[in-house]
Each structure stands twice: as structure tokens, then as C-alpha cells.
Amino acid sequence: MRAVIHALAQAFAQLTDRAVLMVLLKSVLATVLAFVALGIGLYFALVWALGSWAGEGSGLAGAAAAVLIAGLAFWFLFRVVAVAVLQFFADEVVIAVEKQHYPARAAEARPLPFRRDLANSLRGIGRTLGFNLLALPVAGVLLVTGFGAALVFLAVNAWLLGRELTDMAWLRHCGARDAQNPVSRSERLLLGGAIAGIMLVPGLNLIAPVLGAAAGTHLTMRSLPFATEPCDA
Image (cartoon, rainbow, N blue to C red; front, side, top):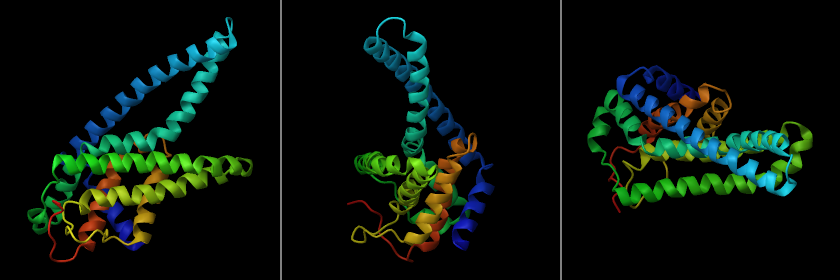
């Protein structure tokens, strides 16, 4: 736990660095624009669908239902969209942390080929969607508890985020024959839980992905063996 807290503290401190700040601004802007576009499209699609189903005179009810459903969809999809957006800028965060805190490691790293980087990103997005969809029935059963459903999604996303946020740095350094993320499962789960919790806080949820990527880089750098081969296979 101490390592995760220290990594998060270092990540918070580096949010004011120019390189990290630029990534933060770009990722926040891209995330907001993505949600605005999704919101407009989803709103009109739901109003049309509900109007067609309920007939004329249901515009107000349809609009209210559309807003409610859109809000629930955004809550569900925020982590997917935010992490997907971060994938485009992840290397910039990792490089900024490496150069400031681990210059020797930065010299060893090599960016992944675009084909592999894209494949990893798509797999990560697929995992996030898939596991959240699988968690829906369990969360539905636990809705009566008042907090059980939220805990289910928090646990699922803690595991997912812990993996994604440490893979961003590890894949630049790992040996092609060594497919094991060097950060312990408990540390990944704690980091993912902390970032998933921050994502529930309005305002802070926009900086959470970049904060998590920076903290994940610190954890990974401190867990790497001394000699590695870049993952170029």
C-alpha cells in the first residue's frame, strides 16, 4: 500500500509539469468533446425511439427518459471513454515520468510499433466493455442493497484499471519472452481502486486517467528487473 500511495503522491506532484499538463489538457478536451458528441447523438436517438414507441404527445416524457438513460450510460461508459482517449497520449505521460525520475530507464525504452500499440489499446477497451457488461447482472441483483451494485463496478474497474495503467509503461520495457507484468496484483488492484474512486468525483474524474498513468509508471519502473528487452515481438 505504501508504494501505491507514494506513486500517487509523485503523480499528483508532476501534474504541474509542462509535458504532463499538456497531455492532461489534451485528454480532458478530447474526453469532453467525445461526451458532448455522444450525448447529442444519444439524446436525439432516444427521443426519436421513445416517441416512435409511445406515439405523439410523448415528447416531454421521452426527453426526460432520454436524459435519465443518457446519464446512466455516461456513468457506465466514462471509464471506457476516458481510458480510450488516454491511449492516444499514454506514451507522452510515461515518457515525461521516465525522463524526470528514471532517466536510465528512459534510455532503455522503445515505443511499440503502431500495429501492436493499436492492438493492445483495442484489447484493453474490449476488456473494459466486456467485464462491465458481465458485471451488469450481478449489479442488478444487488441494486436492492443500495450500495452493492456500486461496489461490484468499483471492484471490476479497479482490476481493469490497475492492469491498463501499469501496462502503459511496462510494455515499453518488458522482455518479449516475459509476459508477466512486474507490478504485484495487490498493488495493481489498489492503484486501480484509487483511480476508479477518483473517477466517481466530478471534476477530478477528468484528471484521473492521466494521474493513474503517471502513478502506474512509477510503480512499473520500481518493479522492473535490471535488464529487459523491449517488447517488439
